[in-house]
Length: 111
Image 1 (spheres, rainbow, N blue to C red):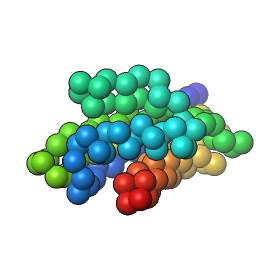
Image 2: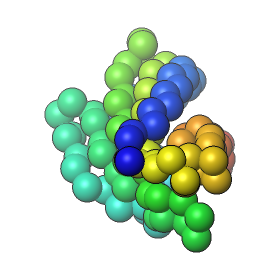
Image 3: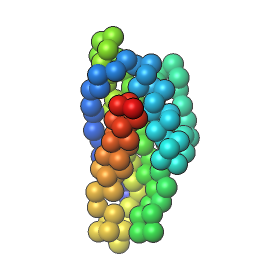
Image 4: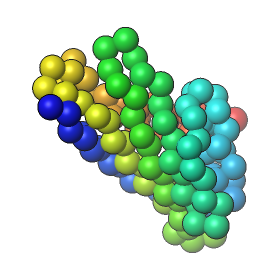
């Protein structure tokens, strides 16, 4: 039996919305994750990660919005399909992928 495991994290970043939005697209490309849907007007992206040898791919739902002129809120949700068997091995994979995405975003914004 398969089900979705969901994880979510929201952060505020001290950069403008336009800079964060452009960088998010570069981050997904550098991680080699596929952008399945992108909504430029709403600043939303649906991306798919690569599957691992012992894990399924995840769907990342990324929503970006301004807090003020120089601060941006980024919300990242991960949905991973797991089965009773893979749930043991795949535990926390969504959280790790969110953390990887946010770390790469911070790295690219700092450079």
